[in-house]
Amino acid sequence: MPRSVFHLPVAIQLASLVIAFTANSCLADETDSEASWRLLFDSISRKYQLLREADSDDASRLQLAEGPVYVWGRPQSQGSTYGAVYVWTHKGSAEAVACLWRYVNPGGQRAIVHELHSLSPVKIRSEGDFDTWRTHSGASLLPIAGSDGQVSERPVARLQQMRTIGRNFALDSVSASGDRVHLRLLPQPFYRTQSTDPSILDGALFAFVCSVGTDPEAFLQLTAIQTDDGPRWHWSLARFSHHNLYASYKGRDVWASERDVNNPMSHNADHTYWMISQPFQPSMLEALEAREK
Image (cartoon, rainbow, N blue to C red; front, side, top):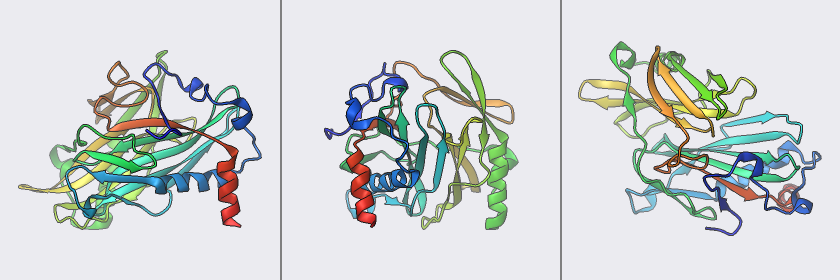
């Protein structure tokens, strides 16, 4: 594990993410520009080297999609929080998603939070500067039952189908104190599949966000997979929240992500979800800004 990255223990709370950092080195300064932080997020995303465990040659390396696929911001009393979302692909299909965001604790100390989730059907691992992530299993894609699972022959119609399927999902976030918030689906997908795999016809990655901000709380992956009965829509959900999440499809409960001893704030039991905190130093921004001049 690199010295600059600390895996979050089970009992830690968001408010103490950076308690061990020195106040003088990372107190929030609102003169930091959002653009500078996004340069930093871009730089960090390029340092992630994600690979499929199933392969051993160069083709196993996942490809980082161009630029952040989404950016968001939320003002807070102790300092603005904002972040960027990145996608890694294999043969044109999304296989990993990450959100890098600026965190400011109540004492004004800053950190860079890395949230990652595997979307791959096989195990993946990270190498390079951030080599702490290794999943224990692949992500599961479940079929959409009935006529909803039928796949159109036309790409434009398939996008409409995916939006309709997405609207049929309802997601709620429930805090430790029992407060329930309904999440809303963003209508525009973050990433549209550009598959070179003949078994994958189409797909897209959508996000559910909280009503008080636009940062993703969960991702919905939809994929049109060739089966013995023809192409069928499949789905999976990925948590990006430290709260409990519950999903239903057309009123029927289909998925839950609950915090417990095996699924704490920092990771899932199978490590398909992974969160770390990277100490922030002002010199990080200064170096990037100097490079841009």
